[in-house]
Each structure stands twice: as C-alpha cells, then as structure tokens.
Image (cartoon, rainbow, N blue to C red; front, side):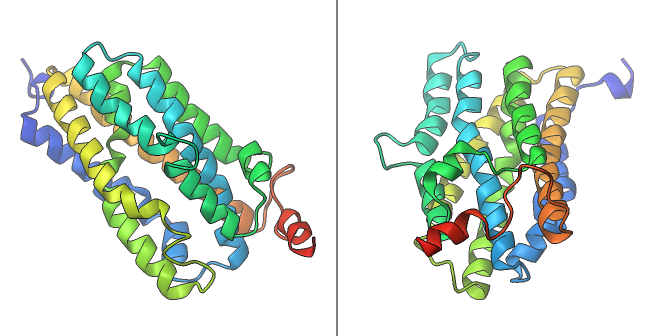
Length: 253
C-alpha cells in the first residue's frame, strides 16, 4: 500500500481537520474582521443579521436530513438535540427565535425576515448548496461538514466582545443567540469528531471527511463574500434588501 493510500491515524485525521479551521474558517474573512472591530456601519450589521437568518433557519432542516440517515438510536438521540436547540422545545424558544430578536432590534419586521425575500442570491445559493450536500452525500460526509463547530467558540467570543464594545445599538440581550452556542457547539462537535474518527476507516473515507469540511468552510466564506460585495462595495443585486427601505417604513409608522 502506498503512503498516500494508508489511513491516517485518529490523531492525524483530527490534526488535518483542525488545520482546515486554522486556514479556512470564516473568522479570517475581511467582513468578520470589519464586523468585530467596529468598522461596519449600522446598515452593514443589518445586512449581516438579515442574511445570516436564512442560514440559521435552515440548520434544523439540514439536521433533519442527516437525522433520517442515522441508523443507530443513540446517535439519533444525540443528533436530535441540534434540531431542538434551534427550533426550541416550545414556541418562543430556541436559537432561531433568539436570532429573530436580533433582527427585531435592528428594525426589521419579523414577517419580512422570515420571508427571506430580501436576502442576497449568494446567501441563498450557499445555504441551499449546504442543505443539498447533507441530503445527497453520505452520512459520514454530512456529519463531517458540521465540524466547523470545532472552531465556532473562538469566533463567538470575538464577535460578542467586539460588537458590545463598538456598537451602541446591540446589547447582551439582543446578542442572546450567542450566549448558549459555545456549550452547544462543543457538545455537538465532540460528538461529530468522535463519529468521523470512528467511522472514517479507509484513506478514501478520511479524504471525503476532509473534503466535506473544506466544502463547509467555503459555504460560510461565500456568504461573507456576497455581503461584502453588496453592502461594503455597494453592488447590491436586484431583489436584495436595500438599506433604508424596509426599516425606514417601520420606523416612520
């Protein structure tokens, strides 16, 4: 067996996955650096929150497609927690509701946010590509694609600290979505990492796991590219939200 075909050890595979985060995770994107250091305008923060809603709203749908692939009852119980975290166990609970409180505070009507009419085409294409990836690829690849959660606690701490320090229009309550995510992300990434290390036995399977995580980082990166182009460079595509349009009518009402 050639060296290239030899399976990585469990530790080597984990190291490769963590290297992807160090090199490709979207905390390195210039939009996030702009957001976290107080350089975004109010309208750019609005655009970020509006577009990010679609990603948040599709997470439980993505996770439901993965749940349907899982044969083991205990693994299903563990994965089901992800859906409960975002949808909540009752009305008015969960991560999606907390994200809507952020968009509420930024002046968006809820029905407009939930409709997703104003999101960027790049946001829609990236999020739907991720959902389709999890639906159509193997369970192993779908689980591996979630491993960006390995890196999320760092970006969350940077985001909350930076936004509270630099923007007087947000506070701990409006950023409440992020308060529970580090604990949830650690729980979920611990499970997913253990799963791929256990089930990616061949080098081909390990390579597919690595590629899946690279794909997911590209999904996150593409969303920020779209935001930068539209709201920093000012090239807003037809049909996307234009600053001052929806919220201006709400404030004047």
